[in-house]
Figure 1 (cartoon, rainbow, N blue to C red):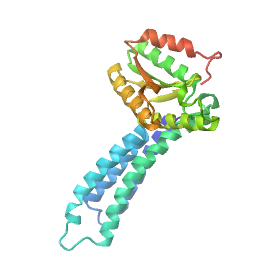
Figure 2 (tube, rainbow, N blue to C red; figure 1 turned 180 degrees about the vertical axis):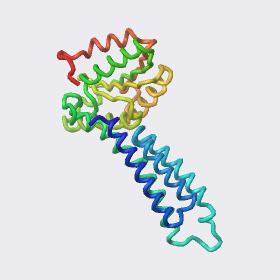
Figure 3 (cartoon, helix red, strand yellow; figure 1 turned 90 degrees about the vertical axis):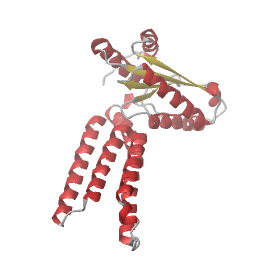
Figure 4 (tube, one colour; figure 1 turned 30 degrees about the vertical axis):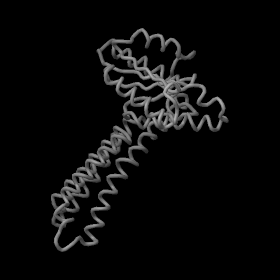
Length: 266
């Protein structure tokens, strides 16, 4: 199953669950507009998490929590005090936003690459658990073809780690470091962005529908975040952003460098 299909199923299941919950509540006199809005915000948080991953889900969860607390100020500031039932209801709702937005977003981000592994074992890198060079070549080539035919913009990030970061590490520690970097990069970009690890250890991030200006912002943020996560110096982690329109020569050269010896079968 492709992740896009999984996303549709999750959204459909979430829609049915919310509608079913509202229908049951209405038969008992209705949940009140506050709880109706709260359930709709939970659905929005779910949709955001499944489409944008952990960071998008976290933003949605924070926004939903803030709105819900504002809606419940009259209840929380009651002169008679807050009943234990009301307090449990509010805390449970806030916890639900966090679980769906943050934990769910992280889980969905991982599932995308798990599906790729099951669908075609030759598309995922064993060390990093993100896409491999073979898949990266195919994805970049397809993005370039869409740009040429339809003018659909894209940006491509190329992240390079200095060999000094892993030079004195045991293989198991090297793998842990690589996987940590991959997890950070995957969690810092959108779900629609495709993270890959090349055979020489570099990472690529394909940003669909993203002009170079936006890609540069993401590039600087990701590189800075990886340096902080590793506690490394600036020269140990370098990154460059290529735009489809501005850097076609560089993209073509990269494709020639990473071209597989056998045609892709996916």
